[in-house]
Image (cartoon, rainbow, N blue to C red; front, side):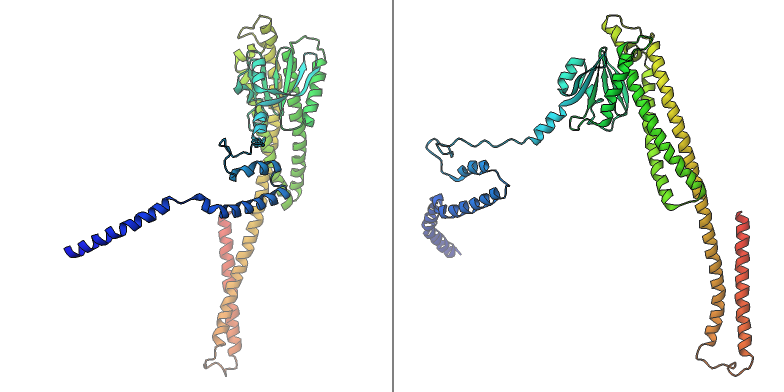
Length: 422
């Protein structure tokens, strides 16, 4: 063993110089040996970029700025040619535009005389907060980008924020600001709302009211009017459908009843949310007193229990909203009653079909008895009745008797069960 180990060590020491030479060659590897392959790769990439430019997928400026990536460094350590400026990649404007959209709001402003001072103007949210004394979280209630919001009437130190139905407004002592989505054009409802507000703000009532109350009342009138118009259309459709179903039950009409029932439920929930928003303000004495913005600006704020005017106004429109709620609830009750009646009619028809099926089953059982007897005599087996002159009549009489007896017995049993159920 010692001799073998000695021979192996001698062989390893003899091979070590050759391994050292191989390692030296590997360490002295030059990247310029791959220049032909790099030229082929560059040519292939140039063709791909040219095809992309021809198809309009890549900008020409991007290609010219991309050529310097495989060029050797110049004397100053830069891969950019000396007579060419570094290419500046275009910035993506999608995220920037969305960010700017999130930071702006579209507003239409009316003064105390009903004149439009700003129409569909775009303002920064930070400027709106600073100008109207609001917090950033207050703008969330009047930002139409947030669609799934509960209706609310918020009272702040210098303004009243209203988010009811399709109206998102900010009311101050001398102006009202209507908000709309920055990404959507002005809709017909917004245009009509501006016209309605102009007419109501310009009309002079016998009892002089502060501007904020006239503006708030104009908003409430528009909200209640929109609810009443939607209620009339929806209730008319539902009542016509219910009248048709009282005469005859049709499958297509039942499908329409399901759709109208869903729409009625959504409308009822929307009206309930508006009622809760008005009721919530009426329960807060401090908010009611803080709604007197004109007196607060003049340095004469109201006491916490001195808010009769605004309370009476809100209670008036709260009663109108409650009337709409009661009417919609009555119609919903009629729809549920009609659905119950239709279900009773369908159950009755279903029971009639089941009874018919049971009768047919009983008759089938009776006939199967005669079939069983005929099958016995139809077998190819020899018995003593083949040559009997009266065998056919006897067997036939037995079969018909069995069929009749089983059928009558089954029908009587079914009748007894129905009597117990009824």
